[in-house]
Image (cartoon, rainbow, N blue to C red; front, side, top):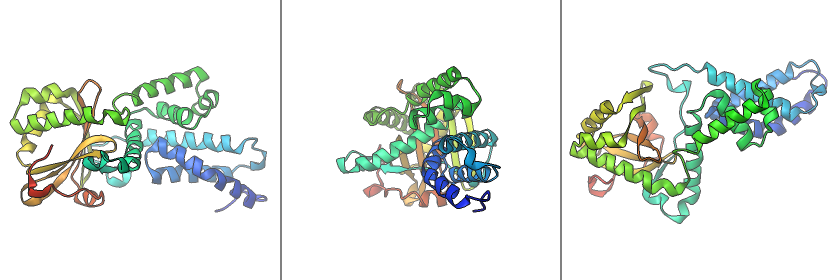
Length: 304
């Protein structure tokens, strides 16, 4: 690394001591390890350009401010496109076999899955909300400092964090809600197989967020419940077997077609009211192969 002159080695040592915490902050804000490392590296470059870095009173706070602002700028720079290449922003996906998740020895794996699920919820927040929540609720940064980082008042920072907290504490509650959310997905699958259009509509939010990863990239849109119900009925006709899994802490399904052909991975975000508000589908063969999915059930019979 290129340093700012005299004292560079000592400054680099102090920076490296802060790097794990800074990376953790940026990772929670950005949802991507690679982006987090870029944000932290940018903080070092800005520190290296300071004319008098030794004059910084609180290096940790200064670096947190820089990483926070860089992260917010990166979030705001992300453009929503009908198709985005994977390297633009790839969601981290953790898949846990639902049967294994019920075993006590799988608690550590499930905890990690729930941790990744938080990143999914954070992805629904605005940049300022996300940073305020991460800094204060996860890293205990005082609201006055959060406000300075965001260029807002202390009260405004509190409001942003409070609003984010309400969203985060919504559909992704504690692990004990797994059974209830799974029951909604089981009912959704049964209705799709039975061609029960009205039953599907009862389980769907009027507008559902749809995200699909294919070999071409990411497609994201909001679709009407009626449209998604039609898609679900059509897709169910091609399904020969399913296996229940947890995807980032949400109920999901691994889906196979005839002759054991892997069709994809589907995850459902379910609210406390029992409505599906978001569906994530992964169909890219390379992405699926890297996830370490559990095998198809013996005999290939559909299993909710």
